[in-house]
Image 1 (spheres, one colour):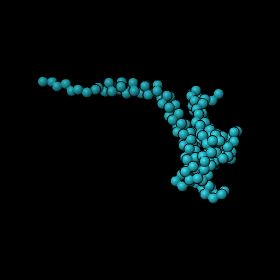
Image 2 (cartoon, one colour):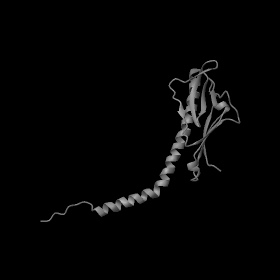
Image 3 (cartoon, one colour):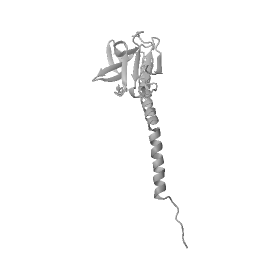
Image 4 (cartoon, helix red, strand yellow):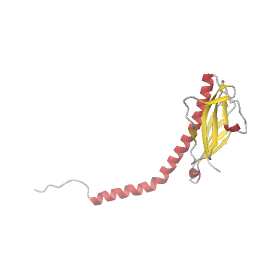
Amino acid sequence: MYIKKRGFTFIEILIVIGIIGMMSLMFYPDIGRSLEVRKLENEARDILTTMQRAKFQAVKTKLNHRVRFLNENDEWHFQIEREDNPDLWNIMPGFIRKTISSKFNANVNLPSQIVMFSPLGFISNFDTQKNSVTLQSSKLENSGQPDIRVISVYAGGSIQYDKSESE
């Protein structure tokens, strides 16, 4: 009596692997763009939430707080600082200095690269001409995707997040 073994032949396995490989090559550009969009979004939202946190802490502690951007060795860093005494600024306890990824073009257009929140939550150094941080991905620009993220601040303390595409 002959018992037939069930399973896949080597050729069937090779065909399935080939089909998976071709599909991966077809969808790879979409996956790459999706990952780039996610990285750009995360970077911009990190700046946005840092500004919101500074505003919240200023109101909560009744002390001036600021988000200060520093450009060191062609890298942008940002941190929350609070004014413990007049003109004496210290990094807010529990906050770790953050770095904007060098893969994005960053433009910090703020007075002295600072957003300062008063104990009432208003921006005390507001300037209508200097009120934004812009991140741009050249990888997304080349693919026709919205490649710019802008975080804008306003005198009343509101913070706005926008997406746009290079012209």
